[in-house]
Length: 126
Image (cartoon, rainbow, N blue to C red; front, side, top):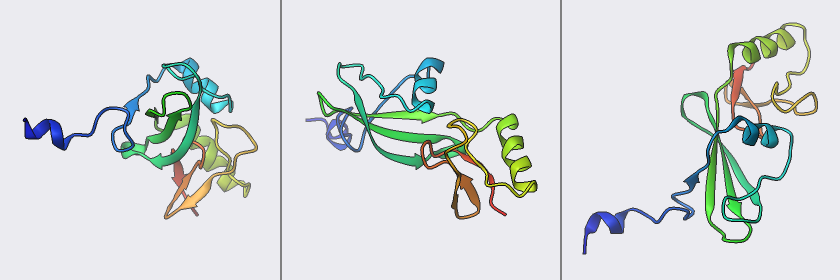
């Protein structure tokens, strides 16, 4: 038996989720709060949100028909989005997520302001 195959968990397991494509339509549905369809049929349920590497966010999902785990990598904040958050902070307003709309406030995580729905940092906390 090959030891390397034993050390790596199977794709779709809790420790090795299957990456989803980052098509614009899929991300727009996610930002809009729609329930995402699973590639295997059924829908995907959100299990958790993580801060990814390099300013990206990671959304952990589970298929409600097959119980396989998926991960949606959310792109890092653009310069325009960072500028909007900075302007809101300078004006003394509560910063909101530029992707999720005016009802989703950013949360403080250490020194960063992070969207709790997508895990993307949008600037430094004051």
